Length: 580
Ligand SMILES: Nc1ncnc2c1ncn2[C@@H]1O[C@H](COP(=O)(O)OP(=O)(O)OP(=O)(O)O)[C@@H](O)[C@H]1O
Image (tube, rainbow, N blue to C red):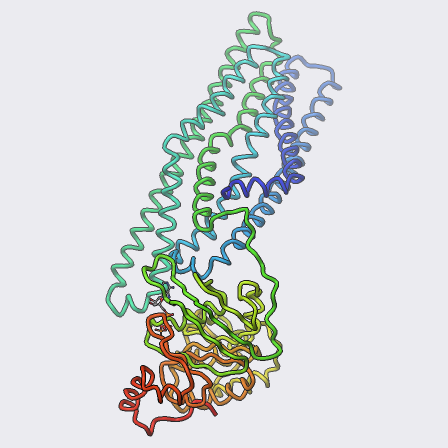
């Protein structure tokens, strides 16, 4: 099943609007054909100076057909666009529904610019599927059959000419457009994704590119990607134009054919001369209705290619993602138990965590230390259910994490990650990210706790917190976590950019608030870990030591050696207790 199947299913759900738009399209099409035919007939009739009432009836008919055509065209547009946007909204919801569980894995794998091009552009492209691929042939065929039936009552030969013209307009012209079209649309999408990726790279890496003197080179690449896209788009537009031109030629040819064969039939006495203008007008109008057929293959290709790219991004399946109903209690500290947990990032050759077993009792304070790349942050990601272990089990409050609803974990956890995101807005908005309700006085009190007394709640925050220092970002993230009021603290190097004095002051408030809560702190500095209930030492994805500070110092193992090195570097004097 791919996106087009999903699209078709969504269209079935919007069948009422779709039927109404087809009905509107049919009435508008047929009213248009009769409007111009009646006009042609009216003009021809006037030559014979008919009675006044004939002219009144005919002009009234023309006016009425004009009104019917306008009203039904409006109805057609209204219902077809309403159906399209409802279908698109269903599709977008379903796409996001499948995309979200794949994050953050998918954000690692796909380049962000390309992903953005898919999320916005490809989903958007599918709107053409109904409006320009599925819907036009249905209306064209119905209007055309009605017109042929009408024409055949005047002349079988002219009706035959219409059928011949329609075969050329609906099959041969689109067929020619299709040749070569297959590649063009795919290439346009590829070039668009390439440009989007380039733009994202330049925007994200602007500073580094500038410092390393690579900005000019990247600007050139950007210009190149932009020119390549413009060239492809030009070719695609040329192709569309070719189809439209061929269609106009067919219309022109058929109208001349109707005129010539009509003249012949009149001379032969098989057709009354008064109908000739009417039949020519009929042919012009009915083929104008069929103009959408010429561009149909281009849109069909485009939709199919967009659907393919979306299906590649998030595999479609009938299997609904499970939503476990288990809730993590926010009443007291959480117990954590990891049994034989291993985890390997997709496409990585070695596991980030290997057979990790660990018990963290509720209300205890645990520090996780170890060299860079030893798997500490990965463990927090698994606890937050941002990723699932490849092997082993994680139990929270004695319940397997698989059975616990991830939202309840996020509600219970106060999280500070190594990289915390800040949104464009104000300090207040960034503090109240979880929608908590606090007065300004309470928020200022929190800012004071994290030593940000010089900040106003109305101060602007730029995108990604560009106008904040790393230390300010960490303190804001800590304030955000402290406002969250969960009973499980997951802190990944939360104070790495702070000076010792500020760190001590901030952490004092944090520990005060975390009394009785379960706290897990990842840190590189080994100073002040004496008060921790448990210290876990990790190396190369494994737990190599664990115990209290005193136990580990007595063991004289890895932690002891690291501590010796740190003491030599910082000096005993620099040591202060992390715990209050
Ligand atoms: N998104 C990712 N995709 C692939 N591999 C990853 C990803 N994140 C981390 N890794 C790898 O997993 C291993 C463990 O990384 P992790 O970030 O958990 O280590 P860490 O101990 O927290 O390191 P640090 O102290 O530097 O933050 C490393 O080898 C790293 O290269």
